[in-house]
Image 1 (cartoon, one colour):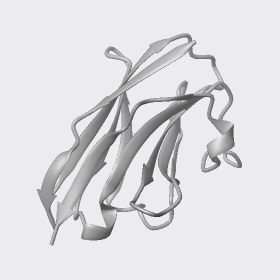
Image 2 (tube, one colour):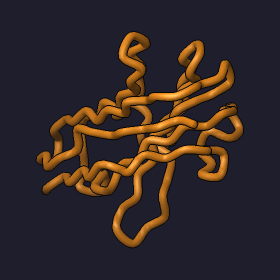
Image 3 (cartoon, one colour):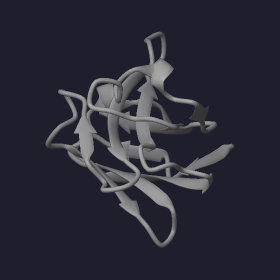
Length: 126
C-alpha cells in the first residue's frame, strides 16, 4: 500500500511560479513511478508529468514541457512539481498518483496508477 499527500497549492498570478509537493510513503518497487495529474473544472483529469521511482526518468505532457519540471528528493521520498510561467488555464486540482509499474507508454494513462492523493488546488489569476 502506498500513501500520497499533496501540499503547496494556492493562488498565484499569471506568469508566476508555484511548487507543489507529494510526500510518498509505503512500498515502491523498482519499476514504480509517480505522476502528477490535473483536473480543471468541467474537464477530464490529464497527465502533467511523471517520473520513474528508481532512476528518475521523466515524462511530460506536451503542453507542460518547458514550463513544468518534475523532480524527486530521495531523502524525503517527496516528488515535486515546479510550475513556471503559469497561465489561467493551468488552474485546477493537482493530484499525485503512484503506479506499481510505470512505463513510457503508460505514464499518461489514469488506469496505470494504483494509488492517488487527495489533490491540492491551484488557482492562476489573470
